[in-house]
Image 1 (cartoon, rainbow, N blue to C red):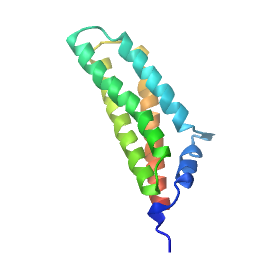
Image 2: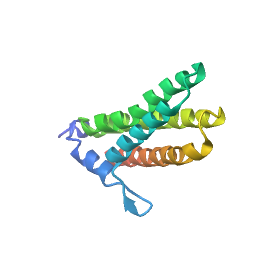
Image 3: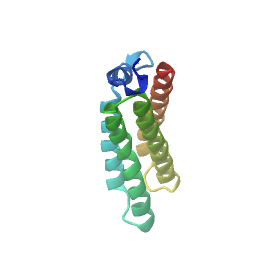
Amino acid sequence: MANRHNENPSRSNQDCRDYRHAGGRVDIDARTFEFANRVLKVVAALPSTVVGRTIGQQLARAGTAVGANVEEAQGGHSRREFARKMGIARGEAREARYWLRLVASQGLLSEERLSDIIGESDEILRILTAIVKKTRQNAD
């Protein structure tokens, strides 16, 4: 009898790529890559103050780690590993959202400039939560 935790994760990868959100297919790999690019543009626009540099470093790390962990999940050796890496990506998305909100609350950039990317971080967080939940349910 094969151990299901050692199975090929290709089905988990398909679960990720086939996730449908709000009536449309979501390519979470491409979406988190674009999110990382947008985060880095925000970081580049922050003022060169102690606060701007401090928040910018944290935001750059968290915002780019979302997609990096999604990529890492694609190479997982089991559903459990896939779900764990997607869970890490979810945590990084939550942290990136925090730093983006802090940038707005500190007035480092206009709320108008940040509203779309904060909204995107919310959507990515919801999508990753659903992927983790679905993968864990399907692993049982």
